Length: 283
Image (cartoon, rainbow, N blue to C red):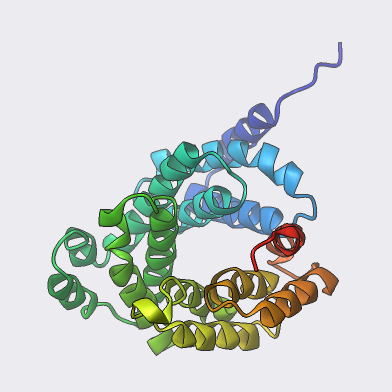
């Protein structure tokens, strides 16, 4: 009888082969990297939406086996953040999944810089003092922690105590771009653009700083990261009621070729969201 196996059974079977074959750490890190690449280059978001939970369970099991493996922890932070931010609509699930991403990012970074996590809930000056001890080798961890924290806050916009921590997430990302302005092809700039486009000028906000971050993110990705233009329209253009810029950006997203290494899934989701935003009666 030809029995159909579920994706998680197949993945766990593959994991058992890796564990038996030896070189476990190298093999698991490579597996995690390949899983991330496969998801990011997928052209059908629904395949990822339905298949990602199996990947996430697999990563959880790998991290359980090697709880101090920084590569696995960072892979977990990336995938949980991506899944929570783009593929889940239920608010409670977003909160749970973004918490998992933040936990993994924190564990990965704080193996080297424990003071940052220890001062996460302390006054801003104490947090900055701990952040000042980070070095060039901590850039990936600072980025993932800052991005995961921003996603964690986004899932809790009804919680003012969470929103108050946005300044700390911003400090982490500012430290990243101070060391490497084009990090992750401008993704750090993208997050800063979103953070700086939350408060209108009438209430003391400085969205023009956000606009500069969005423009820099477009430049660093050579315009290939369509999520930048989507968020530029959603956050900055809507905040300042610039309909012409809003529609121009969204139409550019829709017309672009979404297939780009490492950005295909994100770009296709950006195009789907751009079409919905253009249909909104916002202005």
